[in-house]
Length: 111
Image (cartoon, rainbow, N blue to C red; front, side):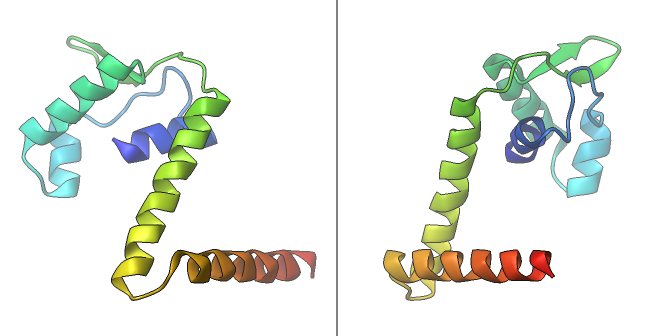
């Protein structure tokens, strides 16, 4: 579900794009098809996808707004924070590391 939402926010998944079939995605991920079916249903309830009987599951034409992008970033931050805490790092250390990584990326991009 997160990957579909992320795809919509970053533009990798455009309105009308066909998503993998339930069976195909279940096989690719090594999960039960019912798990994928439930995820697709939840995404449909959220308005992220449209399920068309006999045709497949498609990205909806729902506009991606700033609130959705902020929610995605908050989820990324929460996962990073949990992972950092598992490794014994304080939130301030994580923030410093992210800033350092961003500076390194900017330096590499510049030349």
